[in-house]
Length: 258
Image (tube, rainbow, N blue to C red; front, top):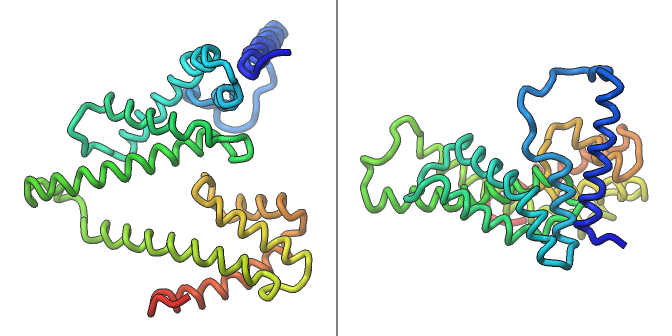
């Protein structure tokens, strides 16, 4: 019986054979949509490699699959995040920052399982949160040490601070709102079907940090798949939750009550 990493390499081998056979058959029917301009660095194979790594008991095989299929995607992921969001408030080179982020990703690597969605989204969030925390702390330390002359005049720091405070407040409110919904779900809605929908929404709220696509259509599809009900029933429950959300949030904003 093959070990998890051995199975990963066997699946990879068979996949390459299949691709080679398709190539021999000539040009395939082109898929609709715009073709990708760049080769992806974080693929389904990367996710499969991570799952194999986590399930593999042999350290030698774990090291092999990490070096060959995980390290480079992690390097590119951290590099892209640093430059895309301009996490530049570090006292050492970007390459060293990348290595620190990757050490953090390695600490979280065993927490990833297939039921947590796409590995790319999961580790992007983990890396980005680390970078935000340390970048902001470094910026505050730099201001304290060097004074206001280091402030980038293009930034509206007052707005940024207010926005950050609002985000923290909303995050804390949502944690309490989830608990309140869980305790009162059979009072908020009465039908078994609606309770099922509400439980699906609560689960999405709990996993909100891992969800990459938060547009309305995608969320409705997720709820429909989890609860197996029609959209019209979902909309009714969502509207009830909206009403409770506004009532509770107003109380929370005004005097901290829930």
